[in-house]
Amino acid sequence: MYANNKTFAPPSPDNIPIKEVAITKIKLLIATDDTDYADHLSKSISERNADVIEVHVCCSPERLRELLMAQRFDAALLEASLIAGADLSAISLPLLLWTEGECVAAAPPELAKIEKYQRISSIAAGVVEFCAKASPDLCFPDSQKARISAVWSPAGGVGKTAAALAYAAKMVKDGKQALYLNLEPFSSVPAYFPEPGKSISTIFETLDNSEGNIRMLVKGLCRQDSGGIAYFCKPDNFDDINILTAGNIATLMNACAFVTDELVVDMSCVCDERTRQVFRLADRIFLVTDPTSAAQVKLSQFVSQHDVFDSIRDKTTLVANKGATVDMTLTGETVSLPFIHSPDHICVYKTLSANF
Image 1 (tube, one colour):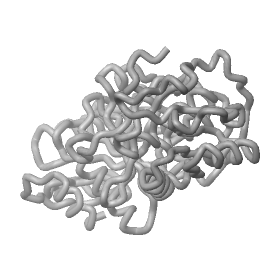
Image 2 (cartoon, helix red, strand yellow):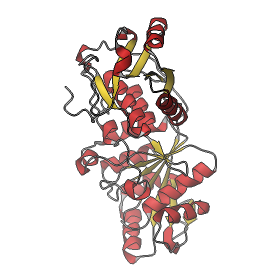
Image 3 (cartoon, rainbow, N blue to C red):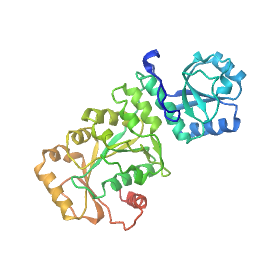
Image 4 (cartoon, helix red, strand yellow):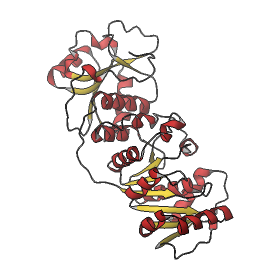
């Protein structure tokens, strides 16, 4: 079942009894006799994933048996040395915490494996992915839905992504949780968030599951940069974005909107049905242009010839980037962004954030 021990591969749900369960957090047990590692792992997961995972720890076979007799767990990271004699039936999803080269003959062969010494963010993401895929009918309690802000331009190269991230950074400075969702066919995420992590493609694969299941994955797989912006790592390949339907986009956006205060959607420059879907769902649209003649011509054509603009005019803010001059009467609001001369694109969007 598991072709590669280093790859997260969820157990087949065919033999797992599925029922709709309201869940706010994954109740996770970490069982290892390495006390220093247990403390470090539990502390890190609790700090970074407190809204998704509730962590419990034990460091001896005796304590493990006591815990499993007293309560149930949604998932457990179990070292082979502690499993002997333990009744794992109190764990909905037992996972083997293993080290390459370690003898795990004592562990049940059917257990899925998670490698011990890797990024803790990857371990947490793996646990969430396993749980979500093993229980695709989870229901999630309703919460306050975020405001959705879409950032778009009919022209490429106008600084759309910089504007989107500048706005997200401004929301963080204002004390809001901001989640940046990049829907460009060729993702620019690695240029702004270089730390590797679990791909957003993992979420794409679950878009036909229950809404609660997708929300769990969204909460578990999004990361946060040092400035406080939450984001997803790039798709595994171009087709993962390209094959999404307008309905898929709506499902993804709705799931994201329930786990943050402000959802900032960065889009491609085409105006297809998927773009129209984003426009329909958005509470606010930032229409970005710059001083180049190509950008001005394309903006003019969109405004004067495309029926979409009239339907979004009332919720559109025109963003004049790089010192552009625009017709102030096109929309009710206009944001003017200066031209920041810097090769550091991260510095650029952080500087621009003050202008929102």
